Image (cartoon, rainbow, N blue to C red; front, side, top):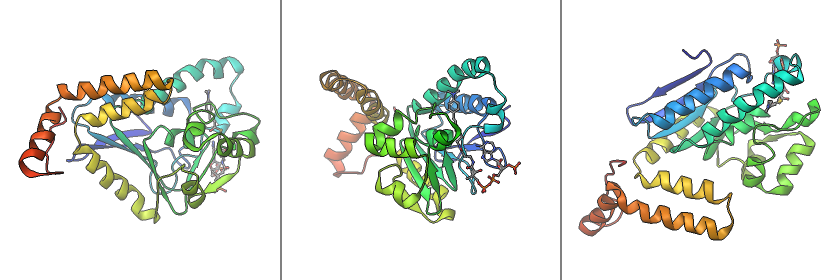
Length: 259
Ligand code: DAK
């Protein structure tokens, strides 16, 4: 039974991965491990069609637990690093749309956690950043890589070299977050959007795979992956449902089965 991470699923097939470790959701090895388990649940449970990642109404996550990390030897840190990366990868590879709902701080590992989602919805008082440099370390859970792919090299360098916190409006301008909302509307808006994706066809999984895996490849290989996955959509019930529905009722009327 997880202590700090809960997965609950609503009647629309939207799961919420809720992080809860007072006071600031600091991420220690146990929390990362529980997040990895939550990712496996969300990936494998057919009743889950889309995911919201939320740290609650006050703070998303202020990063790795600095006090715990400070007490670690090189050997302990080295040993925990692999498991941590596996948990982060498991979250990023959930084959369903995931939205991070960010209230308050998303810093260091907390910002990196948000980067595992497809989209980030932030409260207008949220603050995001990669302040690791101020501790004499660098981001170690995707902050030099996923962040760079998302916002570009210069912005990522500004964030990582400077270690400053960025207001939600600045994060929006640089493409780090996708929506900025009043704090008490962030989670609800993320759930609402996730419900929309939960109604989508099986092809959404293929689109996510094509984009996320394709971006790591050279263009020719990525285009071949796209062609393969495009062709594979013809093996799904939802492709038939979508096209039959268009022919009979016009655009946008299909009710998909996610098969
Ligand atoms: N860890 C542990 N405790 C933290 C914490 C953190 N990251 N952030 C805050 N706290 C604690 C504070 O110590 C304080 O505890 P008490 O004194 O009450 O016991 C309490 O939370 C409230 O914090 P403040 O009193 O500071 O509250 P403020 O509102 O003034 O400030 C703040 C909140 C979040 C802005 C501030 O506390 C802050 O700057 N926190 C540090 C943020 C930070 O530097 N985050 C990056 C951490 S480094 C790895 C891969 C990745 C990583 C690690 C390893 N491997 C591959 C192995 C990731 C590293 C990081 O994330």
